[in-house]
Image 1 (tube, helix red, strand yellow):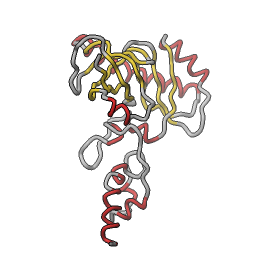
Image 2: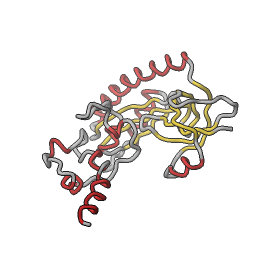
Image 3: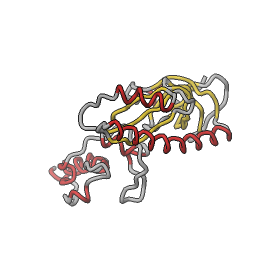
Image 4: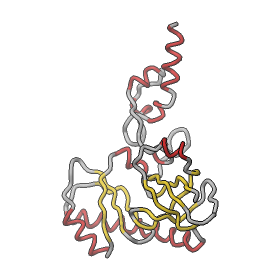
Length: 223
């Protein structure tokens, strides 16, 4: 039984998924997987060798691949994404009518129709118990509220950076790295906040990428 690393969901969660037959899935294969949230669409990243699994932080799903996605699945998935946009607008209207102070980021409708996950940002905690009751009646489906921070919100929005590529947190970063103004100073990057801040308003994650190289170079220069 071959196991694979698969990412799934709007937040690009990672999991180790096995398959019962001898089908070989290649990098980028779109598959239907079973997760604790229900049936979802996943993308195969690589084979889950012991070495690769050991590098994961331990907070990952272990489940199974149901099958390769079919053309019918793709059509259904596109219809679902269109529904998400309508559901988001309906949620915004209801929240406004109820006077709840929160900023909706995205609605994720699980492929197997098990639940809707609503991602939002807010200052402090929000009592959304009554909201969940109203939304459950509105959509006739289980509602899950998920409060996220500003950086996580960037994962859910289509944004591109000055380099012309999709923002790192939106395509491969699972967790935002620790970034400080010290890193910008060492790399002699302009300290203009408008140039060193990302779409989230925080320091750009890419300031961390070459920082270790600059530290090593600095050590060499002092020898």
